[in-house]
Length: 289
Image: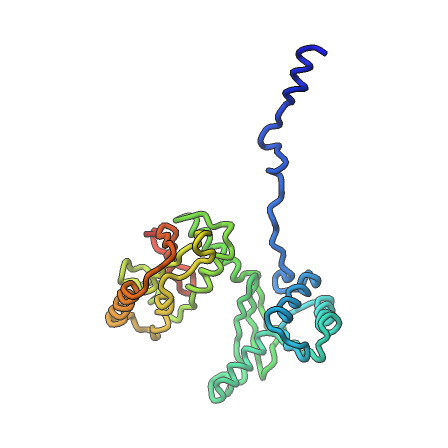
């Protein structure tokens, strides 16, 4: 064996970094049993329901009220029936669409209201990945008048992630955190023009200004709203009225009392803070402070 050959055996050629097998491992994929509102994986749905009924709710199967999306396919309905009766052993099942239940709830909550007297309503059902606008007449959903668009809360979460990444930190892979931000700080505006004017204000004049602290992975693994009461100030506003100075003064007083009486035992990463202004759409300030 020549010296060149022995050198080749003792010092084999190291593959380049991009050929390393560890770098080609796939990232874990998040699977969902339901896609666009329809059941696509009955086996995975069975595991979810089993954990829900046995570990969380601790209920004995008897009767079940189940909502299903409009225009559900017969094959999906049969798969759902098999899960309910054969796998979990329920005695009875009532399947209804959400617009019908919403209309019935509103009519029963206000028996002398407009919905109850007119016996008709228009229900806008915004889901995770789709949206339905469904007319309801005499407690029945008018199926031929239903309009559907494939746009829902997932698109709003993705838009919020893009805005946060552009102005602060990279959260494109933090879907659960941004979902939590949306669920805790978003609200539907009853007066869009007024709320937009309030959201454009700076500093203490902006009553929609909220602080959400991102998790650091050490002292707390979940994000939290720094001032939960501040996220509820939109409930104090009336239609067509601007926030008064008294409301702002009360908010400042409450914040001072919290700062004086409460001592945090965990690290407050002020750099990992997202300020979110929310109305019917997600509104963020011109820049993060």
